Image (tube, rainbow, N blue to C red; front, top):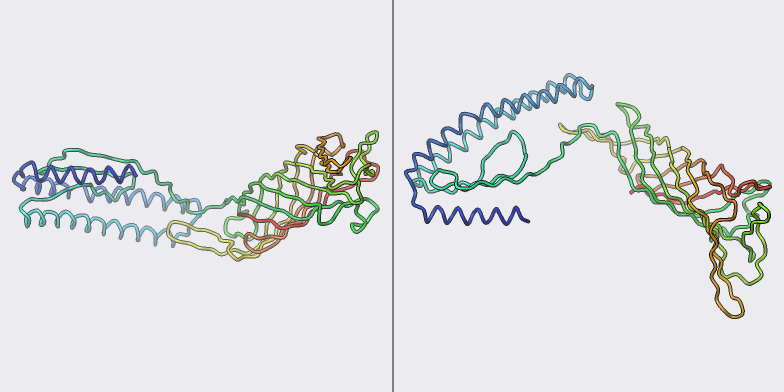
Length: 356
């Protein structure tokens, strides 16, 4: 916004100066314009040298073939030759404009196609610069081959536990009431130079695993053994939540679309099927049990942090499959939920994952 305001201010100031201060003979302006023709070819040749050097570097790094390098150099040379012709023609046209209009002209900016480093504004009165402004515009260079991408990861679904010697149907936890939620950040890097069929997907995630016991039960630490017991009052809610920080790594497979231009090469996963197989490891950040019940006609809510001997270190296997950013997600903890348990239980989760 500031640049726009200053731009219009310079227009107004230049108009005032041109109309208040008398015009000198315009042949001085013409002389200045003629002098501007001389450095044009030098500037464009220097710019061409830089472009050729970049193409040679890409060729050395085997990012492009010899034939592609030759074609890019020819295109760059043609572009710079046209730049010389066009820039010279612009100055010639301005000279003719001055001659036709007896030297009356507002000149506000210099033209330079060698690089885009900012926006320059200049007020000229009678061919002499009165004031100049320059505003930096940082433009990030486009990387030709981008091998790594990143996504925000969001996942949620059903949670439960596999218990030694017991089927999932006999689980003491509610199927619909036990849920998990996960969010984090993941990076996806292409493994091979010339194909995107295999990638490594890695990052970090916060996992929140919840278990809701059935039949009015809650968790109790009984001499170092965590077990379920009947609660003395009617429970309206009984829930155990375990918060974990994990670092997943997946090998991801699937086709992709290759899109190339003169300046970039990109592999796209738009509408493409992909599957990921991997593992994760991390730590338990905290465990909380929440109970809601009625006691003597009064609603009571209690929270208990820790004390249930949950595992401190988390590790397991995970997999996902789907199209583009919507994936079916499965994870299984290899570590037991409770340490030193006589009967080990391990968390299993199934849901949806979104790479946004």
